[in-house]
Amino acid sequence: MKPLLSFTSLILLSFAVVLPFAAFTFILHGWSFSSDVPRHQPETMEYCNIFEGVWVYDEAARPLYGEEDCPYIYDQLKCQAYGRPDRGYQHWRWQPRGCSLPSFDASAVLEMLRGKRMMFVGDSVNHGQFFSMVCLLHRIIPWHAKSFQSNGSLSVFKAKDYNASIEFYWAPFLVESNSDNAVAHRIGERVILPWSIDFHARHWKGSHIIVFNTYLWWMNGASLKILRGEFEGDREVMEMVREDAYELALKSMVEWVEENMDPHNSRVFFTTMSPTHWRSREWGGDPNGNCFNQTTPIEDPTYWGEDSSKSMMRVVAEALSSTTVPITILNITQLSEYRKDAHPQIYKKQWTPPTTEQLANPKSYADCIHWCLPGLHDTWNELLYAKLLTP
Image 1 (cartoon, rainbow, N blue to C red):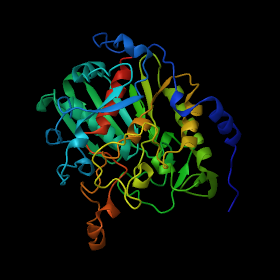
Image 2 (image 1 turned 90 degrees about the vertical axis):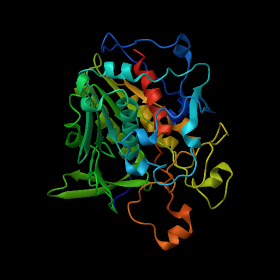
Image 3 (image 1 turned 120 degrees about the vertical axis):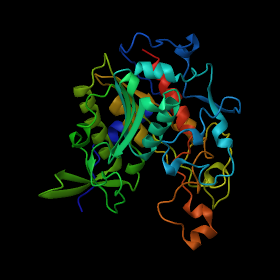
């Protein structure tokens, strides 16, 4: 085995000193969509960090739609349909300190998307945000004027009267890997090509709004298998430190964005890491528990889970801090850290039926990665909407 590579460690160390995690700020240049779309926010929003705040229980305004009212939700995110006994997770509203989020306006978003493509690119967590956006928009579109198709890695929702599409493309590492099959991607030894992005990116060309994410698939160990060359033919596989491989993949993404996205008529976003809640001891709960049976958010404002890697976050900040096409960070990590209650737990369609042993101990097969819909993903899209209103 070849030695681990670490050509960014010094950069990351120095970067950690000068840029705290919560201080990511990216200046956006001018862009133009339909002139009919609101181009402003409340004045207080200008000086407000919408990613810092508190969760407020709000039965009057939440949820923004009913699970039963959105036929597009993926079965792994349908928590009520699969027996979840509580609904409290649907009623929490994010309240930034010093301002309020603009109310999500589906009509304004559809006008913004008239004649355009919005694309979510990444893993199953981004897939959930895509379904949330579809659920938020489809309610005001007549049945004859909308369609939904899913074919392999690509899912497409169309609003026909607007000539608009909202799409999701499966690429868990963004770059090419041996885990790119949208269905059969449970592979024991994952191998990636961090320099190869066109394999996926050819499907993204022509998009006007792209929301990227990639994180959880990088977290299976401190190093990753990297392929030099191609999967077909001669192969040279080496190990690389996780942060270094992540940096290469993000640089490939940035290069593609700079070559293919026009900053005057497009927007690019990157959603930060989605936290997990595998160990309830982290928030002072059962030493042997996880997100199972959790029904309220974490109240400690300083809470930070062990699976959320600040070193990986610093790689994101470094890679995206100076680009010719601005990339806006959707910094959802801290606010999502509090939401131990919002996961599907055991209440979803299972890939395989639980065993007798699992049924005897439900927490053993709880899903503490993904998020129920309606729920947390809707807040992420409210934050996305607020940023889209910012020129």
